[in-house]
Image (cartoon, helix red, strand yellow):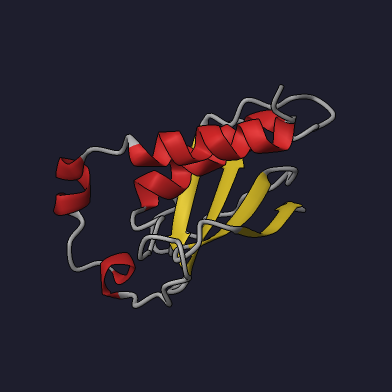
Amino acid sequence: MMSNTRYVALVAVIAVASVSPTALAAERGTAGHDLVCAKADGMIEGPYIRTADAAKVVFKVVSQSIDVPHKAKYEFINAEDLGKSWSVAGWEHKPQSVPPPAGFEAVEITSGGGGLVLEIDKCTGAITKAYFAK
């Protein structure tokens, strides 16, 4: 029987592998495709997590296996390109925005914290950081 850690890693790899070639082709020219990764012996050449969509799939799989106090369902997931990695954050609810009064600039404020953040290496698929946002 597989340990939970191995099972989650296997599911994450299968989920990433199932991202459609059409979706990948649509993202050509993004930082993930321009990134040159070192090839390790016995491994295929990366990057393994080329797109924001692939990073979000990994986030969804991993977040379901993390023992969080209230087992949040992350309905709003955002992936930010950091160059060599993705910063993927999830919240239970999409942050609300209120239009500013006339003559003022819009400022988006997210309060409440508690959302999960994972930093995922594009070349290896490794999770290099995992924390709850405050």
